[in-house]
View 1 (cartoon, rainbow, N blue to C red):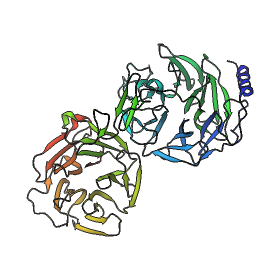
View 2 (cartoon, rainbow, N blue to C red; view 1 turned 30 degrees about the horizontal axis):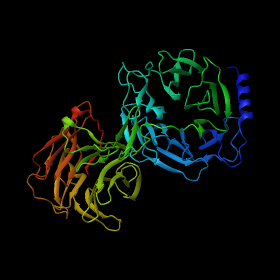
View 3 (tube, rainbow, N blue to C red; view 1 turned 60 degrees about the vertical axis):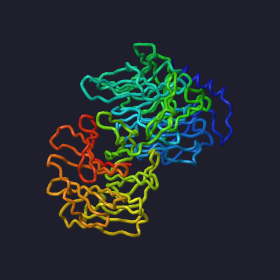
View 4 (cartoon, rainbow, N blue to C red; view 1 turned 135 degrees about the vertical axis):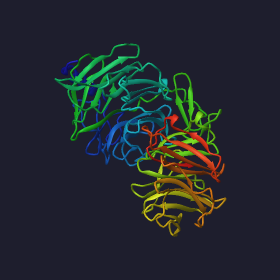
Length: 568
């Protein structure tokens, strides 16, 4: 379509649009994020376009992906600098974070029918989902590099890009899956191994649009393509010479996108090799774009009626899927945690395993919960039903809700805490101090603090667990390059048990320690220093150091660079 026709069309839309009352939210408008930490608004149905009357920009925002929920009249965005998904009313004043702890948040998409939000973390290589209020965070796919997500909630279908290339045979692709994450092979579209794919957009469930990167000796840039779900070949809509591409949206037969310049660019979506046109020029470079339309988000799906799902209801074309962010799924759709589950942190992610399941039947009790970076200690407080961990980068003691939905700063510990244990019978916190090589205790309010066992430089204590019923504590220490487990009464008097210290081979590094008050067993994770691929083993023994059980080993292909483990 020529530029003259484009101007004429926008002029006609302007004449047909109703006059907006100042201070109200128009039925539809353009929203865009700027690199000067603002989200601005412009008319979508007027030419020349201008900022929306009576709508002030949202400030202090670092966003690269935008979406909205018309029901609540809220905007949602991915804040890559803070690693959070944030939400605010369109007119501001009610900002909050609904999900935190992302390493590199790369995409978000709102399912307005099922009241869900889908997200991806490019660095952690996961695709996940949560309720729209941020509760019940669940990972749907692991080991994927997703940069864009497009949803068709009414039909229970989603599309997402995957640029994860493990071997020379792998190719970047666009994946079609049900909205519970189950892929529907073959991939909707595959690319060569150098292609980057961005800006997925859907039209009437039948046509997919995307931008793919091209590079040659003469030029480089992005090509916007479209492909019907029944077609084999894709059609080129337009070709761009810019080297960046952030987000694209489809509205009323036109595509709108931002590419790091100050312009929102557009082109007719049904064209072939069209010339794009500048639609709106901002005062700062743009990193995200969306079109708010209060009438577009309607319809129903398999989760619209009473789902009877305890935590998450995920739609598919013909049925709904109940899913658990934590706990095991029951026949009635509820989620129930086992008596014991083993929690493991890999510095940025918490995972959980059922302690009654051996390595031959290993599966997660819960999907990984992202906690940000620096988690080196982990504990569960059964009195408050809170997961505790200490951030070794900042020295903060942090509380995490079991569903992974929120974090609370409890206190600054002020030292290098390597181990953490809660005595639920007295509300005391035991911890190991790497600097003083000692085991300490502090009251929950932080007013009373004491050293209960000074190891006098003979060893360096790391992990610690306590059993308030037997009044014993166990800790992991390093002595002359050998890892071992030792124990003593919780009063700090050194034990004379001949089985302890329990030592390990020089080739074995023991990384973490846990104790089950239910089975009265010690659990630990270890790695073999002589293996090229760094995998880990989970084992347990009784309090006497006997009856060792292997729960998971390297054959499970779960890599843990370093981490912590606790039984809850």
